[in-house]
Image 1 (tube, rainbow, N blue to C red):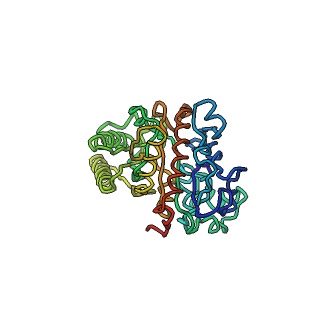
Image 2 (spheres, rainbow, N blue to C red):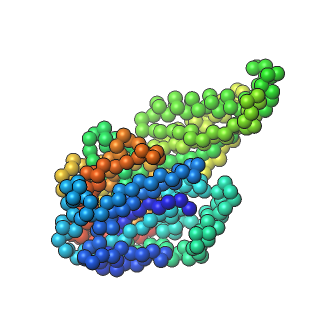
Image 3 (tube, one colour):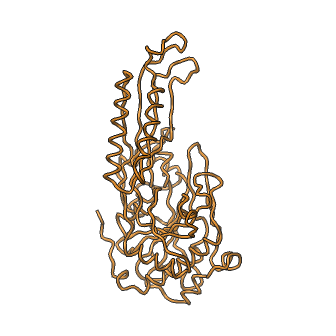
Length: 391
């Protein structure tokens, strides 16, 4: 089922460790009144294609490694024993990446109740359904409704590395995420005719791979003309895949992202039209299957402003930016006010074993988190909020 990504839920009332535990999860507890040390540990673990696992471990305990090695400030000392008017619950999500079942955000969708029978019946390459994978893990899919959050949750906060080069280029440790870009994911199949590589003249070929290659170049060219648009052909399979046979069928994928849904939709239409034109000119067939169309999601404006103030209070210049990657926060935002704090990614590297984070940036993020919790605890506007469904 993949590896977990972590976030914080802030339910009304009680101390950390006294809130409900969705789906049987254990709430955080500590000898002190506010259990912030558990904000450390594994910040994100992503499952990549090919069965590889990439683990991004922050491996930091507040009040331990951060103050001693990075000169950070213990958020507990900031709060000085203050009793917060909300609990702090740590939630771990599975399958954020959506590699195994081509269905991202499985864990967070369960938390907000955004799933149905078709969702649970989706299968991986081995024919195992999501439902069966849950059972194989020793859990009961029939109990999924018990994992859904209630109306007591005031907010969801997620700390995450940027996974890109922007903050490093600006020499900034942190940023407030203002929106998560929309995504379209599509499978494309070009179908021609397989034939002998030596006996078929060039002008008599219906080469599916040549058509796919022409379209891939067009995807790169067209997408480069639109500011903020990113397009990726991340997978390609040619059949029959023999050195002496003209490919008769090629399957490939398209991942298209932009913070504006209309711009993304227009670009997707343009790219599919180009594929149809290329196929027609080469006397091939082309078909499309869309398996994801996720709208862009704005983060909660109030929380974004509070995060900016907390970043400033932590001694860092505030900065706002969109997220080019999808995150569980975009799913939680349909149910509760949600926000994200980005940490700088050294080298802008992600989804690679060299992905890393700077210890001093973790210290700054935890300092920011302490200020943020105190600000929210003292905000009448925040405490009177509700999480009525935001459809």
